[in-house]
Length: 549
Image 1: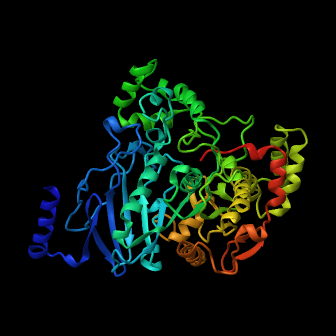
Image 2: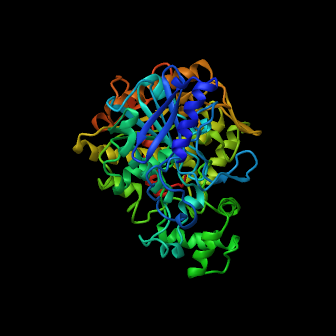
Image 3: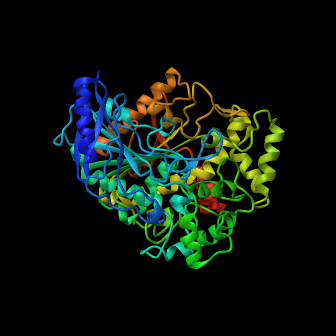
């Protein structure tokens, strides 16, 4: 009745209120009608589409549940048409306070105007970043791929998925409350459910379910690697783009359960409980407690925004190897050819951590920089520090901060991604699939200030996404930034359509082991310039250090 009422209201509004009803579009999905609005001459957006039951009440800490037929509420007003769904619970980036709503499993679709169910356009399914505890599929700060629809004749999709402890809490007590006998990784199961929705419905929006590319940056890129590693995702996508994916999975579900029992539960009203009492308490806690519980944990996660910690202690990850969604770490999965056989782009930037470095050394002298590097890495092994300094000498950089950034970024992200690409290239070639890698040294024309103490000036984490989506509400982009981003978007669109990139600056890694040195104005296809350094870190055991998001 609600749907009939809303359609009647809209029709009457067309006659009696100043509304251009040609701007509104309707799509019949497997679960009901969806309302969209034409926002510009070549773009229609459908926002706030449910893809699963609200994960509330008895559905908290459960895999996402199927929708009932006609369960879509048409969120309509006379000004903006369809509305985005609730953000999933997370800490506010303004004041750190919890915000959002557990009823948050929504997705959004953008299509070129004029498409129909015979258009068969390629689909770009973009997963937002945010460390698996922040972000949303609609807010422009987290990447909004609508330009792929308006400029490249591609159907674009984004989603919200459960975050933080509500999305990833692994706990032995919860294992017994789940018919699978395990807990955790619910956010990844949400992503799978949304991809299944795409398979069932995207044709009605003009998309081709057999031409789906998943993409993401940071935790979104990590999600791409996780989905590529999971046997549960078979047939749900054909291509993947993983931008700056922190590549770490380093605990089993059982190990994570022990840490959660120590680090989270004692900070809640469930302290001291066990068994059914603990399960009941966790289901009754306010959702805000799960957000603050993660924020207040003194040793949660292993940051990669600086030199690696000594001793090498890693604990309290969100994503874990649970034996269900993920059976192995990325390293083992890719080396043993157990991943999905899809075309891939994997990328990183030369100074990833410059977004928010844990140590600012802009004014260090040569002696101070050398002492920092030498003394720090001598903690791991006597004499190691001087070897590190010889690989990253003061003279090689415009500023000692750049050296600090590159050391940290290559240990934490770059070298492990190179290792993944090498394994994937070796195996995907047998399946006639492509894997590309780009590394970008592109510096922003305008510095991004993540806090009052430091402004990023090098190729920082997220800069390629920000410039290519050209949709930031907080960062001013210069002409070279925009041109750099336009190039990325054209390269990605080519890949999304074809599974390969036709530009001569790109070549699948399996053929000549070259990477694309992605910069404006001229990207280059070159031998990987980081191999020697990555071999050094591997020989000294740092390749075993898989960082969390």
